[in-house]
Length: 180
Image 1 (spheres, one colour):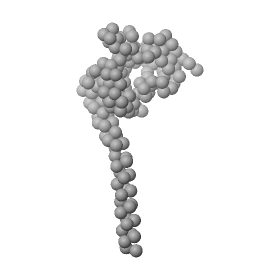
Image 2: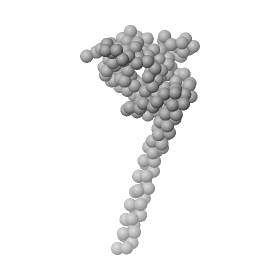
Image 3: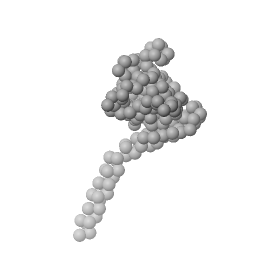
Image 4: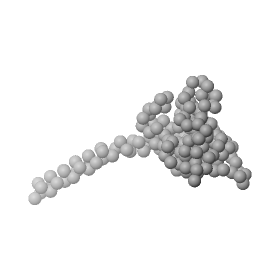
């Protein structure tokens, strides 16, 4: 009996070790995301000289806000026209809208940004951080939207964006087309 109990204990121990190893990579991702969140907060308070406002994983730093009664907020399903510049936290510019000065220096515009129909928001057609951040804005408003790699391009390197990069979008919503 004692030998059998010891054997069962060893099997259980090996099983626990295998489970730990199987879930260890996700712990590393969580650590990387936590570190990026702290980096984003330092960037906002240090470089942008603003207070940290985080909701749903996206850090929002308003530049201009429309507080008029005619405010046209961005809602899920709306098509919006944007002017934007997209960069990593180390200020590597990787994309910009057609009307941006950065675009004139050879960057590719984000698909749909120059299109009169605009990009559809809140339906998962944009990277998650941009999608969520735009839902906090309204027509005529400008803001910095910052978010960790988990809401950006993830673990993949995309164009000029290294893998696991926190992203920052300087966005101006020029038009909101309501689609109900």
